[in-house]
Length: 481
Image (cartoon, rainbow, N blue to C red; front, side, top):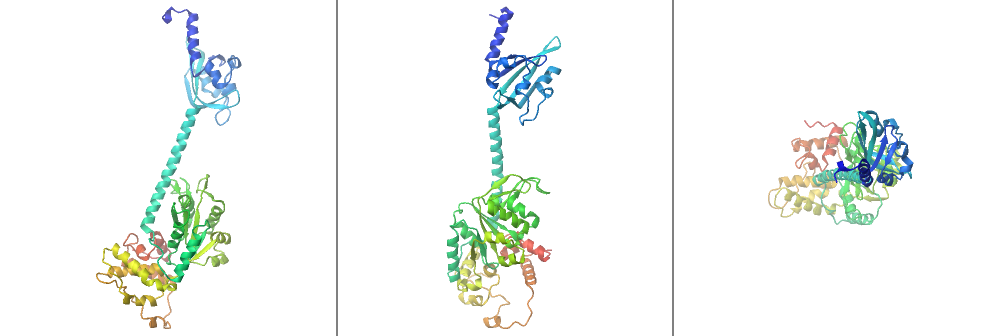
């Protein structure tokens, strides 16, 4: 039977059946915005029955506020606006309120009923999209987390690449009593969760000791992240330690992951801890006490599990007495102290160290190594090596450059004479340490043709990170032009 052969009553009944069968909620409104029809799906979705709504404004029942709970006047409602201008409205991500006081996400359309150019009412069709919105929110959250993980992975990759380029590779070499004692201290400290303070003269290998502690600890499956506190401008210390959000300050064009986040579940090695500015010391103390921080420019609290190993070639207790280092931070860091002996305290290890350094240097330079020329090492035992292991390694590499064939000769330093001459009463007044450091860096730069970074640069020759050498050059006023 065709629709044209049906009576008006039958047509209405058919349309009624269609509306009643729809899974979407349907409201019929008159030109005053009062409900004239409510289908079963609308009753089921909202909890409001037809008898509750017929002849009344649905806005006051479940469309009276926004998702954030702010007031939603009926005159601003798209449903009722369509009754004023006859324009179909649709809306996504709105809320309807149920009879029991709960709410749900909804999308709806309001279509005006127009006859003879007059608005007689409107039909509102709505749909519960709570599940879809939940899935969208989960997807957004997952995308945000993935974006964060990508940023963290990129930061870790960049950091680890720097580590590969600059890290002092090797194990603690030596059989002397001071080295044996050092290894015993490492074995005691490593399995604990205690913060460790490594102290010793410059060039003794404090980072190597920190790495040995990390590798023997429960954190060894995660990264050991390092930060040279003396090589960072004061204004960037917080950003380096805790990271920053995009736009946190001029030049912060994207979010940056700080060293604490990179070291989560691992170890953070803070070298030259005595150079940390006082305000940064306060923030570091908070992280040590509470295990949480906020990025610069951010409000989200980030919790971390990080084992701290700090190192200094200065007397931190003296720095506390002088007021340049916080006493409470000193005691937080100095739970267990490890002293790294100077090279002059372990001269019986010289031959072993030189053999190891010479072999590696020759391999790097693709030169033959058949062993050490032992008589050429005699002068080394009479020299105090103020630069310690770093100075020794650099001098061995210098000798490797000169080495061609046969046994490896350690070339004597021109300013070193015999043991007798070395212990004679000095007649010339020595220059200051700053002057000596300035001249030494200038000599290294001239030797490397002014090149600072890279495998043939002065930083590599001096055993320093590029950033540390540049910082020292700036502080000493050394112009590399």
